[in-house]
Amino acid sequence: MSQRTYHDPLHGAIGLDRALPAEALAIDLIDTAPFQRLRRIRQLGTAYLTFQGAESSRFTHSLGVLHLARLALDHLLRLEPALVEHRSALYAAALLHDIGHAPFSHSGEEMFGLRHESWSGRLIREHPALRDRLEAERPGLAVEVADLLEHGRHPCGAIKALVSSQLDCDRLDYLLRDSLSTGTSYGQLDLERILASLTLAPDGNLAVHPKGLMAVEHYLVVRQLMYRTVYNHRLNVVSTWLLMRAIAVARRLGPTLVWADGPLAHWLWHPQSLTIEDYLANDDIRTGYHLARWREEGPAELAEPCRRLLDRQLLRATDVSDRPSGERLELLAETRGLAAAAGLEPEGCCGLQQRSSRGYHIYKGGLRLWDGRRLEALEQRSDLVDTLARAQQSAWLIHPVEVAPALAQRLLQERPVNSSTGAA
Image (tube, rainbow, N blue to C red; front, side, top):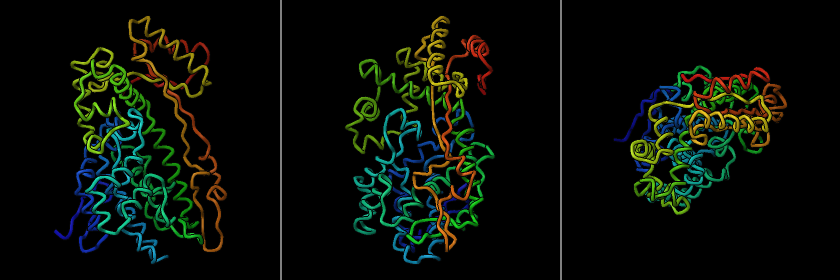
């Protein structure tokens, strides 16, 4: 068929036409095995244990990013027609930006200790189905797209910014999509206004017209709220910790005590020598199957985190963000003591997860405003953006329900603390 339509729950009908070379390229890339694998990688990792609708895939998200990149480029072409020469590179990069994701998305990166950007670059350079199709489109295109995704390098600053920046098509799609799939209302954006406000600065790089300032401010606030309410939700932190615990224990116990099939054995015990075939063989289904096997027949310390994940018998989490770092460690030690006194294995049920996030990074490709006469940094015009640039610290003390009363009493003896200790 010369035309194809993907019915997207967020953007509606996403149509592609083989009569247009860049869209024919996109269709062929979508049909490759590495891209189809993204159907088996959850967009939000273990967040489905917290938000029951969070079942969307990296496949669906990547199509959405392609759709937004096409809209943005069509708008910018009215300002600079010469950008048309980069259409194929933009479409390929937008589509393949997550091709290297591990199982459970960002949770997988933490538990396996890898960067999906590096693997995206490697797959594009080495996998024949991806590399050969890109090279058939234009010699050198595979390396160009790989460098853009892995290192953030591209000769055209505007194209780079649409793929990777603080206002790129990836972020615009995932904020809207994650809000939709989790049923939260924080991720609503004025997408049309943002896209309409994109412009080109005198140096050719992407900028925002001042008419879109409030829409961009709103976008940055939304991103901060989504991190606080979805991505760093206490139960999401707990489930990710349990998943990381299971993988860490399996790695430590080794192949003599832990069963794993060929591909996952390479992931667990020989990660530095992973082939692209073994990499692509692992997804949420394969990792999930191993979790089920380990729950049934693995050593006790491995079976326990697997059981908690698969049966959704999650640990609890108490917010200790307002405590100094030294006191947090003291609380962790005390909590482990309480767990041991209750007959539990402390290392397997007590932990401390600390994170730092910013709604905006001034020094990481900060956004600029351009009205045709004056070019200035976004934070120079917005006190709100200046506030969002400050780091927000979060710290969760993970513990079993058995120690919750004693821990709450311990915290109340000193001063009230914002605590969330109930599981939904």
